[in-house]
Length: 363
Ligand SMILES: Nc1ncnc2c1ncn2[C@@H]1O[C@H](COP(=O)(O)OP(=O)(O)OP(=O)(O)O)[C@@H](O)[C@H]1O
Image (cartoon, rainbow, N blue to C red; front, side, top):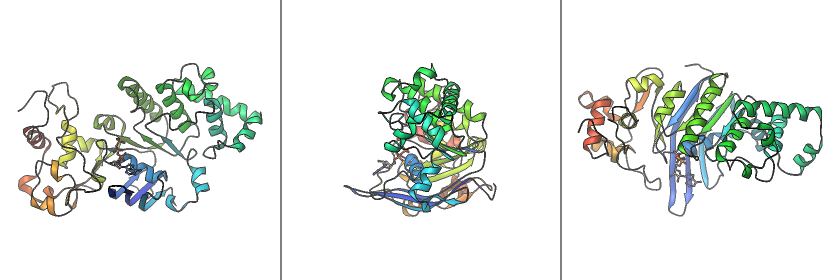
């Protein structure tokens, strides 16, 4: 662990005012990304992964969101930056790719206009009158930027990049729009790329292709990545280190191989047991139950209603953080009690006995 991480998030919390009352979604989140490191946040849908990255990148509207904690990027406190400073950073030193490829592109400008602007002006990408005049200026700079965009579109394997430059987002397929967004996020060689389930809004085969494309591209670059996925198998493929998130809390973190060698939290163990295996022994239905209701979260450990080891202590008090090495922690009371320490196999047996759908193997 270095003393100079590129991104360091401390004690982040996010809640929302809503019709059903206050939703206490994210809390006590500490995470860091070292220079050149690929880190993933893994958890089921609704666990607070997107809310966490949106809070980091300043994309939550406050209110209704209430954000607290500190977010340091290369020594700058992102929460203290003015809107202008943040805009210059986003799209330049900080690249972002989100789940829905349509939301990231402006429908009234061509792909070329948008990507060339990003290449020339980075985060200072203005879709108003200013950009209209910028685009009228046919300078050598603009030609250079165009060449860079075409090169990048080729790198993301965009079919017929020259024709795509003159197309509007609505004229492209979902997969092509996602490729355009990946190209846009990488154009200015950001120091940190934040990728929120890229391609997950698309069908499974396109999603898989997008993911393997992205992993190939990032392998060749010296870039830090914070990636979000609900798929632990994907996280294993791409990341150096994993944070497991449940109910808006980080429940475990460790270097990727350590998580798979010896996961400590029953939730992580349940996710591992749910990864499809050729032996057909995975819990095909995943872990029984659903993520908490954030307007009325469970007391004590938020995972206790689904945990096969939960007892009174888990229902009563928030669990302690237990360290298993400098870089490996889990937040679970069981590890202070030798008799019932969970193991992957034990948890899998218990979860299966509890009625999770199974495809074969032990019953
Ligand atoms: N603007 C908002 N106002 C109120 N609640 C919100 C808002 N945005 C997100 N939430 C709630 O926060 C919770 C966590 O959502 P989030 O999108 O972060 O989950 P996730 O783990 O990223 O899942 P997914 O992969 O489906 O996006 C959800 O219950 C969601 O309804």
